Length: 300
Image (cartoon, rainbow, N blue to C red; front, side, top):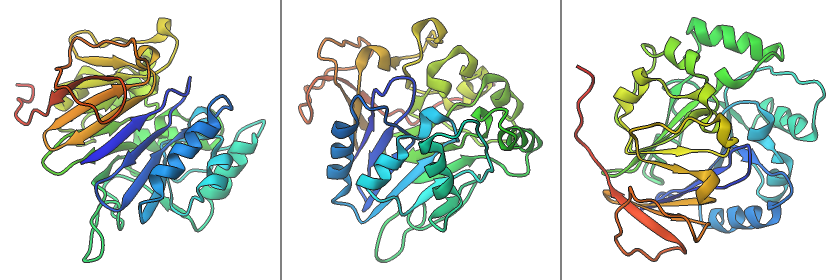
């Protein structure tokens, strides 16, 4: 069993994975002041029982590392997973300076397609792995190389985002896409290995500009797409797919147990007709469940 939580932190991202193994993972950070103490206390409480805590930065956009200095003060970041870059910003915020300090320190582990690390995806006799894998970036891919050059020149950061996949043994799979943009995803469609994934967090907070292209969706075949908190007028609602919209649901907690995913939200009035009621009570505001599908057909 594992728990994944997506916090409603406005136009930004903050997730954690409470693994069934001795791992705790935080993905991105957007602490803007309104809920900082509450969120930090929860992260501290949930991580205290784990032996390995890591922070994964998908890319160097302010709404993905805002308040990282507060997080580091509360839960010291000893393992900073980041796509290697030399991003610059003008002006430099305190959070960006702290991001750069971590990025350029000995605490940094530079992630890329297929990278291996204890105990991210390699276990041993003392600890099991976390079930995380990095599907992107391919550091030699010309599209990525061009986007990294833009990032390092301060001209754009979205398309250096990592693609991260989490797999629960004999259970659900979950994918994060950072802020990848639609055209870039189209450009690299033949260069990234995609397979059926239970839950996909829509790229760029669900914006139309980050709409996951059909070339990806046919392979991912997601059961649930989670749409983030971008303004409604900018969202793509993925017609034909089951989805949860964070604008309506608030915080989303996913309980992954064997071949089930049980969903809980912070908005007690939220309702999702696409989920099955299995009467779960692990957290407040249960809204339904899905059974993980394992068989699917690729296009053609």
